[in-house]
Image (tube, rainbow, N blue to C red):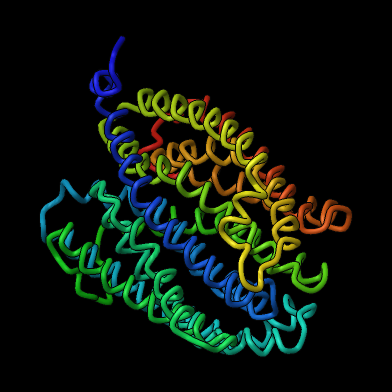
Length: 449
């Protein structure tokens, strides 16, 4: 009988790179999610299911959706480019990194200003169902979330630089804002949005600065901003990013649609959805994001070596494995949902009745796990092949299905219907990605397709 170490040593080196990277990411995610869980426990203790949590959840989703969307799209197209720059001379690399930093700052400032001054219009469109006191609190929270848009973009660029070197410490530092909020909530004696506001702002500042320093060490250069577009990487990168952003923007509307749907279901629906979603994100992050984050630089490197068949075979094997893992976690989570919600949240203002309500919603959200687990590795495969147009088309189809399912299921099932709609969406996503991945992608490394 072979030991685990012997089995691991017998794997192909590329499988080992993914497995080792995933293990590191999972470890960092576990620590980070633990910090996030403690933050959620503190928020639940202080605020319960209340208007403050409604305001925070709404503002968090609506103000961060575009910056996070852009970071997600840019990371997918940027990491393969950064992997290729590792083999270039220092001057060429430095030029690209400097220009990348400069335009990230410009875009981040534009987003920050747009969020702050455009917030009244966001409330008119998406926040019409919110009570007046909740709308006032969301406006106050934009003092933190507007500058956080710039900081999110800078953090995303630094994280991509680290991941291109297969360094995943950025995953642990994702928890810095949660730790800052935890400290502020515990240290404060007030029950308004102040602790959430200051914890968010200070946390993002620390995270962004810390990651920039780590990225500069990984690259061996700071990448001081230069406002030009002279690097030879820009034409292909901008073309690919434009296509990818289209798909990411479509998928990013899922969060705001959920908030809009919940806001029209009545008081505290946003808070209930938020608690269930954040508990679900603990499982999603540790279980699937670990493999997905570790796989992209490895698959991009395999593609760069010209071995597309091996990259596809590697990704499909990992996808099937993750699908089975997700199914097992769903089954276990269905039975443990009430216990998990009670363990994390049931104290202070969060009652036993709140526990049963959130657990019911969480169970329907768990159905997405097998498909979410299975699809992430295939997303990395198509990204490494530069098949961004196909990815964008799948994203738009996912969004369309999600929008329809929300309108059909939410009036019948309430907040649980929103979660079930997400599960149906990921089932479609997995089916599409498998169908595409089974087809070879000739010349995928040369141009987006």
